[in-house]
Length: 313
Image 1 (tube, one colour):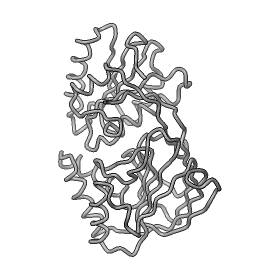
Image 2 (cartoon, one colour; image 1 turned 180 degrees about the vertical axis):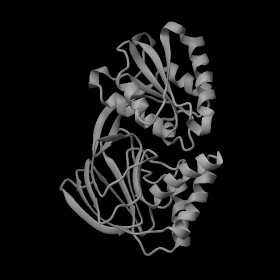
Image 3 (tube, rainbow, N blue to C red; image 1 turned 30 degrees about the horizontal axis):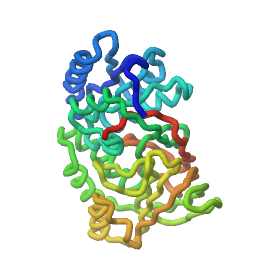
Image 4 (cartoon, helix red, strand yellow; image 1 turned 90 degrees about the vertical axis):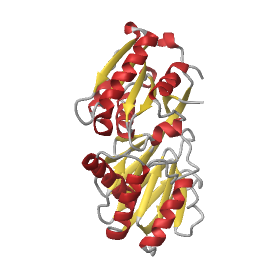
């Protein structure tokens, strides 16, 4: 599917605070490159000022906008997508991304390069796909929702990034080691799954130290937690890790997940569903596309083929 540039203007929504301020410079560079190629009349720049501001901006875009480009990390992209999902389905511009974050998992799932110039080339080339969007307790997500160890690592990584100014997989692994050896906790949960690999509704009750519900295959900087997940299959991919693993073995499983090689481990369990009701006995750490989520009861569903996105080659 190709995006016709004549279909509308391009709106760039940028988070100037992304990567500890690098987002501001990236926004200037991206705006300059886009203006040079589409002109002032075909482009507008919108800067976020607070959390969730990108959602409000995307929801209220002028009808003349045919493409909205999110410049920032996975959290900013998720916010923009949430704003688009608030619009009627026939009034949603295509979503493009310029990844300026620490993990950039959604951009990788779309095949979009991390170079600003090459990401803009993707936007203007106009290759599009129609993909699924996840929803949990009324909040939208485009890549990942997780609880327990993985969420604790993701949230701790954000705190470390703010404190140190560092980014990347190494920072994620430092946080992982700290969580594994100092804060490895087990959470009892019950999940009621509908659809997916089994047609009938079924219930899973277990104790796990991590549980992920994925639209895309990766998070945490391309750890392939659900390597079989596809953005457009209409399903949620579930991965949970049962306990009785010591920190060293749990670390080995985590490292294997970098290449998706953890799935053969007997402690790793995979499933698929179109809808999932998840209850925890006590509140676990939780994250949704890198942002904190709280609670013990979660109603999660997949909204099939609900968002047009710009993809790489």
